[in-house]
Image (cartoon, rainbow, N blue to C red; front, side, top):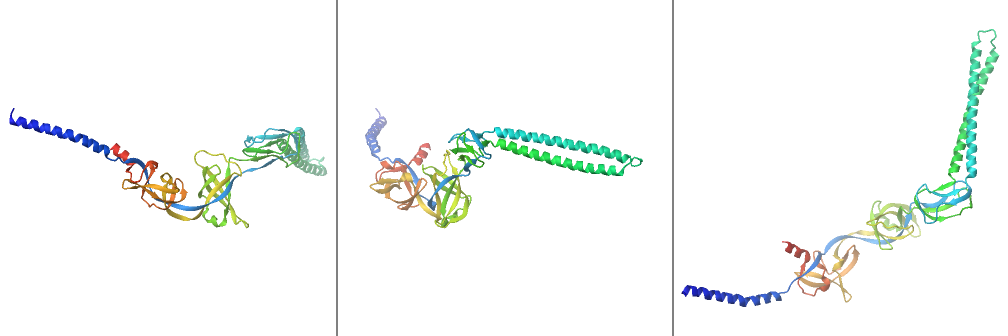
Length: 382
């Protein structure tokens, strides 16, 4: 074997031995190196905050009240029960209408009689006109009588007046017939608007006088919010402004100012404000007089530091957040204020731009290495 071949063989053996010896150590070091935990993070930021005060209001309907009978008579039957939903024009109850039917028929006969009298008066006038023309044609004849001509002229004037009377009688009879038709139609009590029957005031067989209540209705499809707002909070409630409102079951909605009633209660120093209720998502079925809390502005807008609610940990009565301090978990106590949606106002302990852990913070220990989950996904994708 040559010297050069022997040198290559020794060098190869030494290199293989060196790699074999180094490999277990390198694997062991890699195994012992600490790994950063992947967590979700969010930044502390500044948001505008307007102080509000809660005002208790209630849902009120645009339309509600009794439906009254328009003609007197006994009730034949009711077609609705309490709780039934009706549309405008639906028949709610029916009065006994026999007398109204016959009264309508009598007035219809009066119209026919008045129309016949008018035709008779017109025929009489036509006959007098013919006689008058014949008399005027005899003016050059010895048989002409001026007195008779004057009599026919007066009779013609009277006939024209009789036609006017007959026309007036016909108009009066037609008006009476129309009133009879209206009275007959009013024996059917109809719903004046869409709504729900909330009370019946009589039963079949009862006699109702004109104007007495038949049912009480409520339109629950178009409810507004009415709240008695302190007078010193009215200045910020211009029409069209949207406020937060919450009903008793926790459903949130927008209350848009429609009108401020210019009438102040001197005892409570409040004014009534009407709001239009705007629901987001699934529409809730509200009820008249249901309570709703409206949050009315109480001051000017302020910029405040806020943190996500998911970042807060409660440990031993203290409120903590896990702060990302250069890739290490640092537990920091914080003092919190009121909630703004899904965030808390930070009174002390954090500043704008701080990164806090919002997912996986419950399992972390102080000083543990952490890494933002969104950044880890970016690194993996690249």
